[in-house]
Length: 124
Image (cartoon, rainbow, N blue to C red; front, side):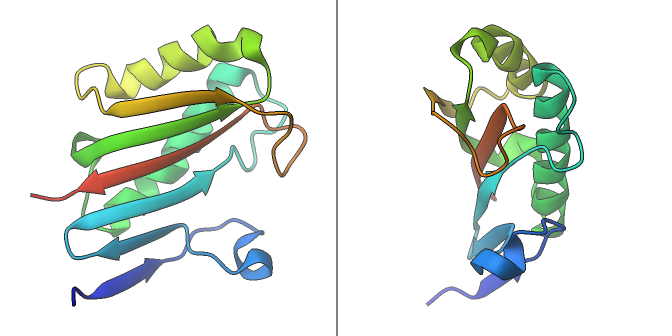
């Protein structure tokens, strides 16, 4: 069985819920749903940038980069944000083009969050 490495983040929810920011098993990295902690009052685009920055830090700790990401899942709370959030996602992933899903949900853990993103990466 492949070695498991739990990667902690800075979310105040991690110890309460009992999760890791990311888990690396072998050459696969699973990044938990990540919200814009600290950027709650920002625009949807800036919330997305803040979220991706947190994801990037987790990927780095796992020895991965955005180029290794093969899937993202985006959870939006406002349908009208799809294009702004999508364009911001494209700033990072436009050339990488992972498989991606965008879903509108009623509410996220923090009601001020307009976006939450999950990611999966595969290392070479």
